[in-house]
Image 1 (cartoon, rainbow, N blue to C red):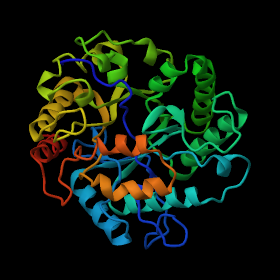
Image 2: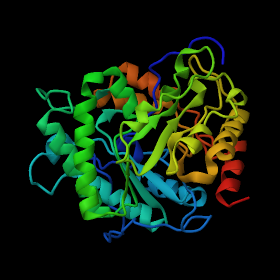
Image 3: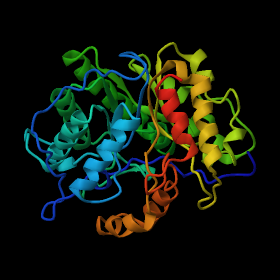
Length: 378
């Protein structure tokens, strides 16, 4: 690692706008041909029922239903699971209503996943995935705090609705929360109390559901700022014990290391000794071409996958590479502007455009074969 790196380059949560096709009149995910709704409580992976579930965020290259179906067909060739990370439609989940567009979107996506043999893993996300220091789309006048009763009610209601509707094996309650709490330390007791309340409610209904929150691994290690690898700040994770069923991280080491070959041999390995619980990579990857201030090559993707696999692969419950295919940043800039997203968010998203294991047209990169080999147990 050479020189300081920007500290606020954070992992991303791809919005449902980019994860499914839209109808001309409503912006909702188009309904698949069948309305049957599966349980996603179990899956059979290449390594067997208890093996690692390999997956991606859904992110088709196109805004038609045909593009979505083609994308799901491709995903089923290279994945066991999808990570669905819905942001909270705040006003829809305050109160007792059980009807909303966001519910329909998630239901239709779950049906598509089931039709293609894919498990759905859920992380309820109250934050802006392109800037984890802030909430996303809070209604005007709402206090941006986990102490806000409306925030707490909406997040709880969405989590419990997902639990009851889909019966997922894994259910997360915020992504990269350590980034937000480091920026807003006064929020820590408020978030911890909310997490504990939702955790207890989930366990009361479904004791086997694995409940977790994800932690940004580069942030835990303090390697954004250069100067060599630091010791992990375990307090960022262990604040949540014992109500943490799986230790899940995100990791984008291109923000800290010029090449994936620079990733230390003990970069991920300390997790094995620190906990005996199951681990997960809830999102991550390495870019395959230089982008902004960061470097990347196709070989870096191979080396990053190898670092994860060789150091912690034996304990992974699931492993999500952010996306299967690269995307064109210019194609999504205008839709993001129409949604009111900032230019900073648009720029940040563009940094991840080459993180797929295939090119935009579906041509596999060298890392695709490595991923498929790990998944098949080779």
